[in-house]
Image 1: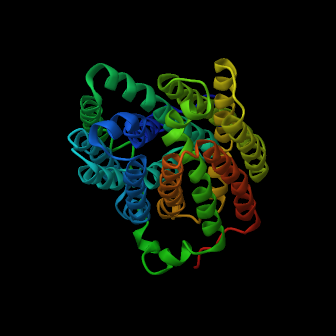
Image 2: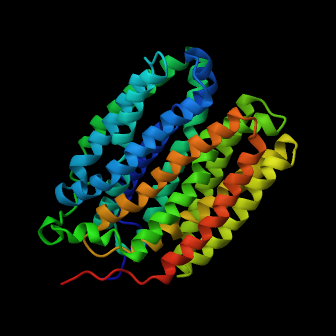
Length: 399
C-alpha cells in the first residue's frame, strides 16, 4: 500500500506528545540561569557557585541518563517519562524556597535525575511509533520543541520574576510542570514501545557503548554542549558586558538565538532527508556558528544587527541537529535505541558540567570577551568528532 501523502494521525500525535515533553524538559533546564543576577544578590552567592549548581545538575543527569537508557529499554518509556516530568517540576518548587548555596543543591539533584529520562525515553518512542520514512522529520520536531522550550524560559522567568519575584516565578512554573506530568501519564498508550530485555540482557549492553561509533557520538555531544551550554546559560549575563545592551534586551537576544535555532532545526530536517552527507552539513553549520560567536564577543554592534547575528548563530547551530541525530541513528544497532541515545546524550551533560564552571570562573575574573572565543572555538573543534562518527562503521550486533 503506498504511503499516504499526509502524515498519519498517529505520527502527528506521537510527535506532538514527545515534542511537548521535550520542550518542557528544556524549559526547566533554564528556569534558574536567567535569574542568576537576582539570585546572586538575594542569596549572596557568586557566579562561580551558581555555575557549580548547574554543574551538579548535569553531572547527575549525565550519570543517571546512562542508567535511564537501560531502564527505558527494559520497562518501556511510557512508565518512565511522566516521573521525569514530575521531578523537574518539583525541583523548581524546591528552588523557590532556597536560602543559600547549599539549599540550591536539592534543586540540582532533583532536576538532574528528572532530566535524565527524556532523551532515552523520547527517542525510544519515536523509533517505535513513527513511520521510518519520516524519522528525520520526527527528530526535527523533537529538537525544535526542545529549542522552543529553551527560548521560552528566559522571557517567561524574567517576566514572572519582575512581576511576582523570582521565588514565586520558580514555584509557579514548578507546579505547572507537575500538572503536565499528570496529563502526559494519561497518554501512556501512545508512548508505549517494545521492551528488549530478552535479547539485550547481559554484559554486551555495556560493551556496545564502548564501540568506536558510539564513543565518537559521545565525544561530539560533549564538545558541542560546552559551547551551547555557555550560550544558553550565560548569554543574558554576557551580552551586557560586551555589547551596549541592557539585561532585559540581552534576555530577549537569547530568545532570538533559540528561535533562530528552532528555525534552523526545521530547515535542517528538510535537508537531512534530501542528502546522506550529514557530516558535511554539521561541518558547514558549526563552522559558521563558531565564526559568528567569535564576532559577537569582539565587535560592538547596533541592537538590530546584534539581534540578527545572535539569531544567525542559533540558526546555523540548529540546522546541524537533525543531521547529528541521523548520524547517531546510523550508529545504533536494533533494539538499543534507549541505551545508545541515553549514553551519547549524557555527553551533553558532561559538556554542560564544564561550561558553567569555565564561564562562571571567567566572569568572576572579568574575562567576558574571552568566553566568546572559548564557545566559538569549541563549535569548530566539534566538527572533527562529526567526521569520526561517519568514518566508523556501525557496531555489529552479535548473533
